Length: 80
View: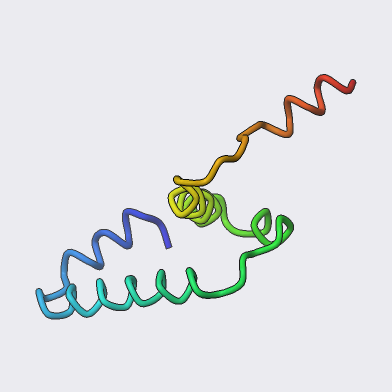
């Protein structure tokens, strides 16, 4: 389902149905936060938009942590 189609479907929902949808989404994020972290292979197998969302969420959870962000592709290019 495209984002455009999804937006069109959401627009026809009633206010109560939108609130229910928001509740389901929030519940899903809560469940994801309590679930085990995905392995790198599992992350790479996600659709691109879902993978980006997962990574952004992980970074937001770790915003108070000290860690280094790097691009693996750059390391590969340096090794060649």
